Image (cartoon, rainbow, N blue to C red; front, side, top):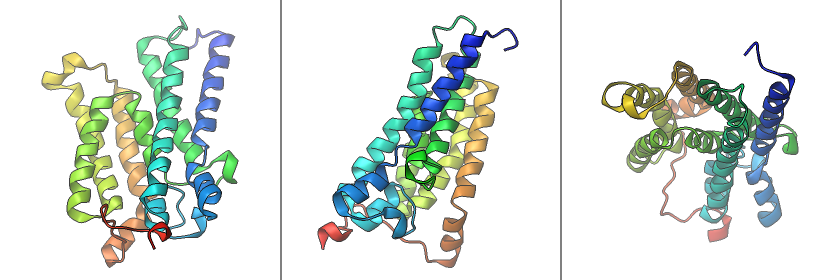
Length: 230
């Protein structure tokens, strides 16, 4: 790192700023205002994310929000990989580290979007998209856990937290034993996985309180919801 040139530092800062800007695209806010005349941050849980869109406006509004939030995270990490892989000063280990920084930048942009007065959502969909840009198999395993928990409990928050807590377990499993020969997972990524799990628990602290109190809203995916179905 000490031997990096000015151009390398300039490119790193630039791509991380781009990752933040991509993460700042407030899809829930824009879709809510443009097509429904609603600022989603003023309704339901006041969270500018897929779950609140589903709860307040229904599936038709929630699906494109999830898709856009997922894609902007994936695009941010992919962009870093595409651009920095050609820098001779960046080795494979540092390329992974830069992708991890891009994950943080994109999620930070979603939580504090420059295009929506720095008031966004929790960043789960963006986080999933960004991590998919690094190790897709691990994300698929986490999604499997999320789907099982959601189908049995109908709590999106519980499913998200459970999948998040399984994330570091899957990372360690994937980087050791019989899977190790297929993986270039670094210690940094393992630390990152534990950080993500802790961050998800922290960002869902209000949901945890509602789950304990029995007041957390359930989502029934096949049940009609939102004003569009009234």
